[in-house]
Structure formats: structure tokens, C-alpha cells
Amino acid sequence: MTQCQLYLISPLEVGGDFPERLIRALDAGEGVVAAFQFRVKELDQHEAARLAEPLQAICAERDVAFIVNDSVALAKRIVADGVHLGQGDGNAKEAREILGREAQIGVTCHASRHLAMEAGDNGADYVAFGAFFPSTTKASEHKAEVDLVEWWSGLFEIPCVAIGGITPANCRPLVEAGADFLAVSGAVWNGDEAATVGAFAEVLRA
Image 1 (cartoon, rainbow, N blue to C red):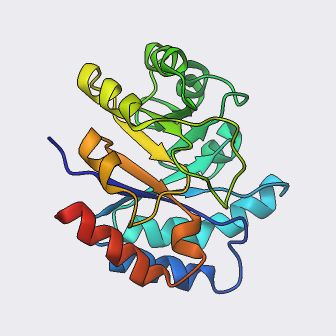
Image 2 (cartoon, rainbow, N blue to C red):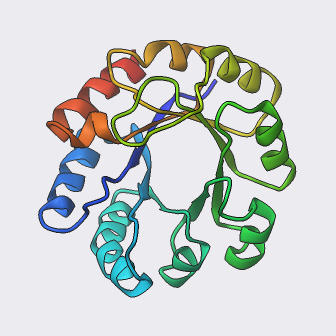
């Protein structure tokens, strides 16, 4: 069984001192943070690419996958490691044709077994389930239960990501159920990122 790892999701504001904060978070979770998702909204592609550049370099230096949220076009433009697709962002098969074989393509599947199996059939590299807990980052009408992770990891080889309100205090049942990655945002960026990532690391290494 592979060790569960962290999948950091950016806050919406990634300018200013955010690159330094990202460095602190990744260095605190060395070997535990597998991926970073660049999630910005309402920016034109040129501006998004400019903001992504230093963050992409920070991730590359630390061997952390740099995943673009929602936009296949932006992922292609900056040669990101992959893209994360919501249910309205096209499917994994189309993204694969544009981004190539090496790209990591993930798909939001909410609390749906059907959507997850469909994503797998379309060639997704991972599926994301949630929200497991109330989240301050993103309102969700979908509530996922831990047994969904257990069911998926027992039947399928494709990794699954658990998302939604996950903290160092509440994540253990998801890890024990077989989640491959914990996607975290607010828990890390709303406080001391290094301390929080360190606390997650303790649980994941236990």
C-alpha cells in the first residue's frame, strides 16, 4: 500500500509573498507533498501564466507536480505537469489529446461512483471525491462519506484524492480508508503553512 500524500491547492491570491509561503509549505512537507494545484479565477491567461511561472519553478525544484485547475489551455501554454478538471471543464479523453500521454489528468467526481468510473474509462490519472467535511474554501452541495474512498480503493487501481475541509485533526479516517492523496487548501493557507503541513506529515508518516 502506498503512503497517502498531500495535494496542496493554492489560495485564489498567489501574488505578493505567496511564493515564499509555498516554499515554506513544501519544505515543511518534504516527501509528503506530491502535488500543487494552481487555482486562480477570473484572470486572463497571460496574467495567470505570469503568476504561475515562479510557483512552477519552486515545485519543479522540489519534484512536486504542478497541476493547473480547470484550464487545459493554460496547462498546455505553461507546459504544466497536468490539469484538474471539474465536471464542466471537458473530459479526460479530450484533455489527453491536447496535453499528451505524460500529463497527469484528474477529475472532480463529487460523491458519485458513476462519475468516478466514467472518469476512469476516459483515462483519468486520478479521481477526486468530496467534500468530506464543511470547507471554508469552496461551497459544496456534495457530501462524500469515508466508505466511498474505501469502496474505490478496494476495487480500482486509479488513485483517489479526498477533498473538502480536511485538517490534520480529522484526516486519519480518510488515510485509513485508503485515500492516496489529501487535497488541502484552507487548512494550510489560513494559518501557519509550515506548521500545518508539518502536522499533516506527522499523521501521514504515523
